[in-house]
Image 1 (cartoon, protein in one colour):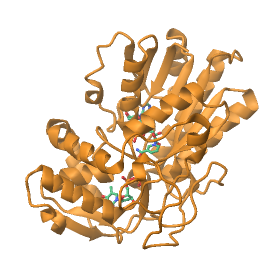
Image 2: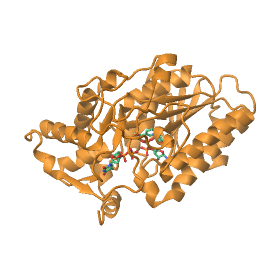
Image 3: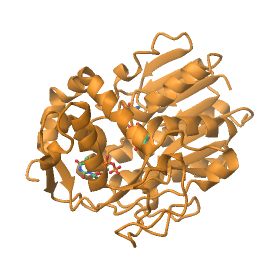
Image 4: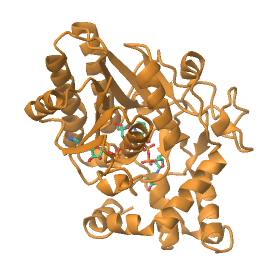
Length: 374
Ligand code: NAD
Ligand code: TYD
């Protein structure tokens, strides 16, 4: 496979995937297709934008005719589909946009690939990137935490534990709760339907929460790093007890590379690092790290923690079982969580211009609106 279409490559995870593929595979031609919504930012790719094997195309995945034309023009034989609306809070306010992009956009890409490849599936692959949120929420049977039954490099730190006995496995029934996860679940179903009905060579992966450089600062970790830097309140939803399973974004990109090349057609793989954290605990780690790196007394900014009204339908616990991926394809996280958080905080503090460019102007108004009354 030589010509690869990556959608959503100007976003957080997409930019890491584009960078990895452009650098690692100079013999491939990488076409990054992105609409550049509020979340798309070409500054995420400054370091590779002049590489000879990289092309950027500004387009909407919902525009079927344009997508088909791009696939023909660039002789695309592999698609890695990341473009999506990705923020749960926005999906609660504006579910239509999520259905349009995540469902109709994915359908338009599937249909374009099917039409262009026209039954010649040899050497072709349609890889759809999804989320663990499609499985719904897990029970929190052990709020104090129990020793986790499995470990990876991501989860070898001393705080490592699990908050329940159940995990998301690939055979679990979909039970999405938010408009975001419902739209992603629907897109996953369409991808599988295109395999089962037409034979399109598809693959789906469901990953846990990512963290790392270039994440849009509406998501927990970059938002809080920026707020701590400016000594602004940190809006913790509910009691801060919700649990998320965190994976460093470059480890997700490495998993995508591995699965794109070696994953089995029509399979699903869950991607995660067995790295569960309660929000409030991860927030305290972030505060201490920012304080230390800014030369403030460690923990001085704990008073910024502000408990606010909970997110509607807030899923209690996510925890991925990624043993299938480890067993069958040999993928493992490369980074311990403590190293990942340190690298991440340092990156945001060292790249304040990147952050300031985003958080000035319209975003500031959006942010104020989002937290009005909370
Ligand atoms: P993001 O919001 O940072 O980036 C999304 C990108 O898609 C942006 O560049 C945006 O411009 C582009 N886009 C949006 N609508 C588009 C459209 N109609 N046409 C073309 N481009 C469009 O998202 P992310 O966090 O990088 O997530 C990428 C993918 O990974 C998503 O599919 C998401 O569901 C999935 N995922 C994310 C996480 C996470 O923790 N962030 C975890 C698991 C899975
Ligand atoms: P987020 O980064 O939005 O990812 P997701 O909702 O996809 O898991 O949120 C991570 C967790 O942090 C989630 O439980 C909601 C919580 N959260 C807050 O408490 N305050 C905030 O300002 C944000 C953005 C999230």
